[in-house]
Amino acid sequence: MAKNDTFSGYHPLVNFLYFALVISFSMFFMHPITLAISLACATSYSIYIGGQKAMKFTLVYMLPLMLMTMLINPAFNHAGMTILTYLPSGNPLTLESITYGIASAAMLVAVITWFSCFNKVITSDKFVYLFGRVIPALSLVLSMTLRFVPHFRAQIKIVSEAQRCIGRDASSGGVIKRLRNGITILSIMVTWALENAIETADSMKSRGYGLPGRSAFSIYRFDRRDRNTMIFLFICAAYIILGQVLGALYWRYFPSMRGSGANIYTISVLIAYTAMCFMPVVLNIREDRKWTRLKSAA
Image 1 (cartoon, helix red, strand yellow):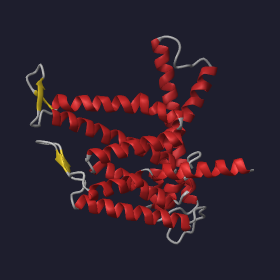
Image 2: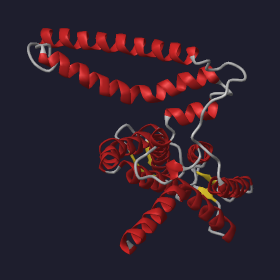
Image 3: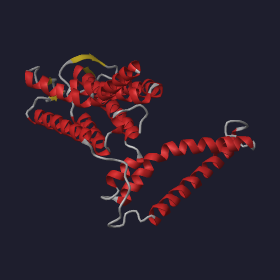
Image 4: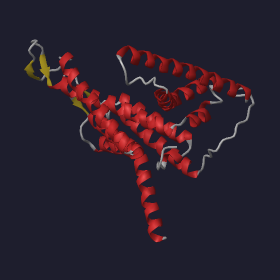
């Protein structure tokens, strides 16, 4: 469970449904306002549950990635009717290509940020709980994959410190020596990863994992709070999908920019989309205020 995150305490089915909706909508809706909403909500939630580490990740990696995507698209995409100027190569620089580059960058960063939040909230035990009976083998592989990177980083730190104690540090000495020590550490890590995977598979097999009729202990219970949240997500998703079908979120970039106007129905769909994307942050803020009132009353 993510630290100090109320939404992580909800049922895994609610968590998974939420991320499936926001990630899917972020990838398929190219309306500028929906992209801005998705990016803002994803960044807010990531910083809330990740703190300074998430903020550093956003500034160091996501912001340069967004700027690079914004610059690359107009350099190679010259479609559009509104020509602003001509590049040294003679190709036109159009307003539509710039706008589409900004939209593509926002979509890319929003999806990556949502996936980073997904990785923090949907832990390996939640994933096995959701899909262990439906696709047991694939569920176990995906669960091991999700936890591989953090475990690998922690283990390589331990191995590197142990090698440093015996004078086999990969960050000191000549180039040949550092390369040899680095290969040794990599070999140790590959062996550890393979052994860990085999041990996990043997352990799950000895417990009867994946056998038909096998019962499993679970700490997750679907209560009234989860039911109400699930209903809220279904209502929002249905209204948003209906709005997309009816053209409330329609937007095109080429050959000229054109989309749905600022009518009442479009605004209502955008409000529903904002409410759905911003839901975890609202839940956390409400819980924080409740906790603050209880502490002040004590």
